[in-house]
Amino acid sequence: MSQFFSSYPTIRTCVGIASWIPVIIWSLDHGYSINSVSGRSMQPTFNPDSNKLTRDIVLLNRQAAISHKYKRGDVILNGFSAPDDPDKVITKRIIALEGDTVFTLPPYPDKFLRIPNGHCWVEGDDVYHSKDSNTFGPVIRK
Image (cartoon, rainbow, N blue to C red):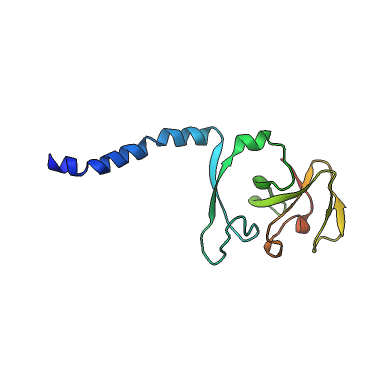
């Protein structure tokens, strides 16, 4: 009998953790997901310390992304795929939307560009370690 009471805090902890399982399942079923961000292209916003082998973890609201009207400055994760590797999902910041004129950086061949309809211009926060629209041009918004 004394063993039961000595393990009571452990039992209480297990029940407390188990009570969150339905909440987590409901959240994942209704449009939330957890993802990690790797790489240096979005420093200092994500992964600010490049010396560590850790990744930032983010909570994504897919329902909000469907009904969201994108604006300049938004960070998109899972909003589009890398044009040169469709299986790779990239994280970038929206710099310009359709109809905007953007000043580009090398290696993009033109000095500035007007963004076509249905596209946006995205860049990483760390310009020197980012493969973004300056490399592959405007991307199609989903």
